[in-house]
Amino acid sequence: MTQPPTTGTRSTAVTAVLLAALASALILTVRKDGYFADPAGLSWWYAICWVLFSAAAWNLRRAPTRHVAALVLAGGVAVAVTGLVAPPRTSTDSFRYAWDGRVQAAGGSPYDHAPADPALAHLRDTWLFPAGAACGKPDLAPVADGVCTRINRPQVHTVYPPAGELYFLLVHTVSLDGVRHKALQTGGAALAVATTLALLRILRRRGDPRTAAYWAWCPAVPVEAVNNAHADVLAVLLSVAALGLTVRHRALGGALLGLATAVKLLPAVLIPGALSGVHRPRPAAAILVPAVAVLAALYLPYVWASRHSVMGYLEGYAEEEGYQDASSGGRYALLRSVLPDAWALPAVLAGMLAVSLYVIRRGDPERPWSGALLVTGSAFLLTTPGYSWYALLLVALVALDGRWEWLAVALAGAGAYVTGRAVHGAGTTAYALAALAVLCAWAARSPSTVRLRRVAVGARGGRH
Image 1 (cartoon, rainbow, N blue to C red):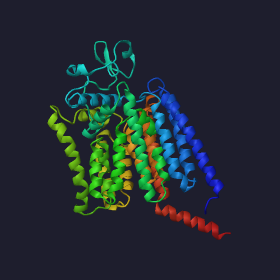
Image 2: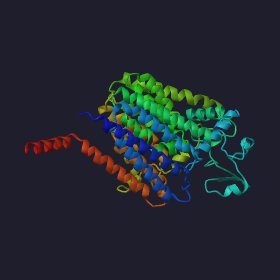
Image 3: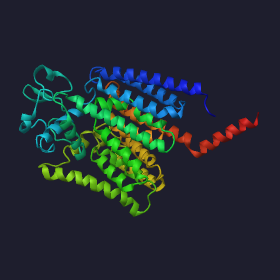
Image 4: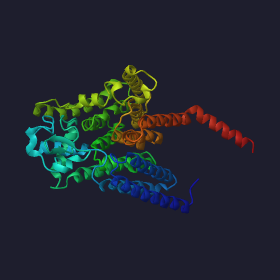
């Protein structure tokens, strides 16, 4: 049934009001420096933002189709720029990005020296390497007598892949002197909006673009992609483009998937989704060969130019975060609640193999993002990562596919990263609730449940 014009206009207006409220709440959230001082209070602000986001996305369903794209884009711009109102609040990763860009601009390899290495002392400034009283802040790490740094883990080599490093160099090169953190934040905002545009383009070809709002308005985007300026947003943009192109242009989609993986390694988990319904070697090779070729082509120059491994601190990071030894960290939390620690990693590998094979075998080649969402979401629930920005990729996949319940997994990441500092076990609880939400939604969408609902509706209709 077609909505009356007044109803559609009212829904558009209500959505706009909710977006204004969301943007206002996000400004207050980003300006609150509560990660160390008040993680519980910051968690409540996160909750308010997610409630407003949910209300706006829900109300968008009733807005006229002709208004949707403009609403999504305008709201996405308004939401993204809220991340620019303060310096990075809950992560110091962008300071490493700025340092790596500076090292490369000076002719060095970012993989050769740790930031604390005296060999690079001539590149230091008072922004990244303050001294004196400033070193008392909890987010600064000591380097030498009286000198500290905003860069986390300053004693270890960088962990970022080559396309990420090229992005850091590009931002450094085009930035004006003295802009400091604003350069990477502005880049993050531009990439976040570009991702919204890519989603709208893909979804409008297939009908209704409403689900693009799941990315454009999600609170994780201004917090992690813009304020904290995580390079994951570049990987997300490339991943969205890759999956959109894979349907008709496998080689180009595969090349972009390789490029996304060369920014952050996480997009490699999209490979089974890209291969959805591909049962023959030749079409599979059309995706995989360009992906591997692009990845290798980007790594090789750094391999030749570096005296140390281009893997950097990757192995140490995996060990530090508990991915190699389940008993040493908070990873695999859901599995460890029902299995011995020693079984967790084998269970993850077996589970990921099973889900990947299912997607490759049964996935829809016209909707590779659906399989990619299942594999990526399963990976998050099995590994329970402690960093909330990893879920940016998941949020974009939800926007492509429309299964909103997986957003609970992204919210769980914030629970693990922020709320876990105030409430013991909050991350595990959040991931458990997210898994429950996914299972309930799956059950509600299953063919047997749909048939039962139809039978029940028919029975009620027959009594009238």
